[in-house]
Length: 189
Image (cartoon, rainbow, N blue to C red; front, top):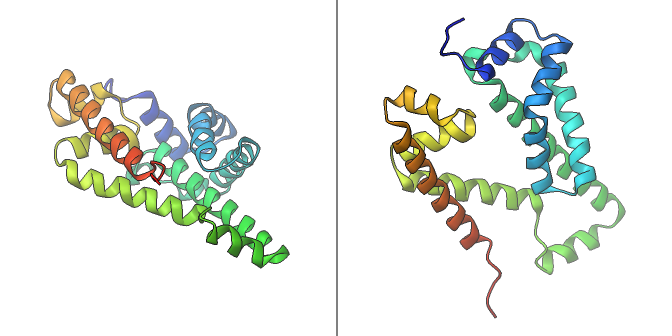
């Protein structure tokens, strides 16, 4: 393989070529912690552990569907994790409704919110801010976050100095964090 190919790219290509239990283990070691962190932001740690397990079971079961040409393995795994998180909330909401539909309505009335709708709103907030920040920051953030690429890899791909990439990434992430904090700030009475 090319010397410029990263370990993540090698793992993606190996998984696409032959999704063996060993490549699944390597994928779990590489992205299991990230899946757990994402799930922990959405739910309790014990539920997040279940989501991690369900995610990698889904990865294994749908391994033939992965195509490295369509994107990095990490992004594919994270997309599966997001579906498992949504499934968790759908099943939880169904259980709550099956036991007491009035309880869910009361929770929503008192402003506790719907976690799936909150997650969609959060995603839209991030997308809106990405559209506002413009280029090249938007591309740099997408490459760093969605494709899990290093700043060196991004600098090479965009033919930019690595310091410039780091500066753009830092400013863009700060803006995203500030926007996130603004939308999640406690209301002032």
